[in-house]
Image: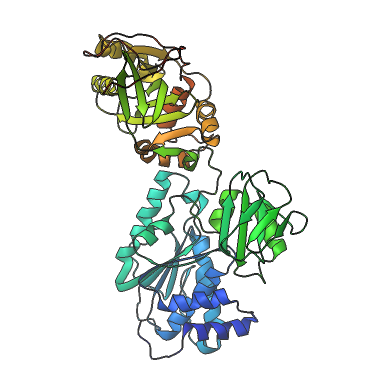
Length: 525
């Protein structure tokens, strides 16, 4: 942007703040400095209510003041959101002391306006459209994405992909050397803002608090911290606690009168205490879910809805099973932990385009009842190819049986699978699922996840994380095949009853699952 006018954005903003009668906090000056100096691709993430869009409207007016030929495309989640930014910019241009006479008398459509000096007959000085609108023919020197990520357009993987597609069109709208600026707060774990940051965007990120420590179900009264807690905000769940009656400050530590039960959050360094007072923070936290608070005020990329199946509570592992033979017996080990049961569940599908995933899930358990989700495998090809894949997995993991869900296409699968498994001793169990699928998934997966006794192989987490984070009870047509199969395997996890099954391609007639007896095992070397 070339200009014959020499005034910084900070000075321009302060003149406007004086006109408006604003008291300017330090964070607003910080945003102004950054906006003037940031690069071509930039992300401005500031907590909700911090007036970031208001500041960006003044920024647009300053850019047009410096270069009347400059062109903006403002995009919001929809047309009304986008119009707010353009209307705010127009109001600044009409009343700012340095912008007298800049507004053109040329009449244009809603969401568009021109200033004197715009040399482009086709494109207005500022044009505003919703992110899903068709802007293919537009041209701009800068695109502003203002709150384009909202709950209605990021609720599923498909909707997020559509949002990315529309964002991608902006690259071709920009003239050479043009800029992109993203403004907002994350509304999902797969946030577009995080993606732009990973792509190398300049970033200014200002959460409501500079410091934060979280303790889940702590078994302690004393919480030493590495930051000053003189002006601490201490929460038990959604409740803001009071110093004196609930806790005391001892140096850089918080001391509770008794061991707190539940989630503890300790914050310090409120960046705008004059506006976000203690009472205001008390109100907002009480009215927010934990995910809403984390994403909208602490700028941690999380979905606004509560995740019922949170993969962060699953314990990862990377070891592969090992079959060990000793003293005429056999055992299956995951690292140093002996497994005592296994369950394999196949939720089969035919592999057609847009059909469900044909999902095989395998879980082990140890004698303490911990579950180890070791396989989340998508089977492809015709039904014979899928059965042969199951044979390979079952032999490799020495599985005693496979449960086949016989709903839908699974009804004719068991005889084919039995034929392919003949001679191995691996059983085929048929199961027809009844009742609500969402309830089956919650009943199977939610208790071990919330209780933190479900472990999963890293390959499983890579496969199922997206499905778990996006899954919501009651939503129709959502991907849930791995979750349904895993829940079935958990429900089918057998009790510790050993039995002998037939030879599997020459292996001994034995079973790695221990019976009810107690044995002293010495490994053969």
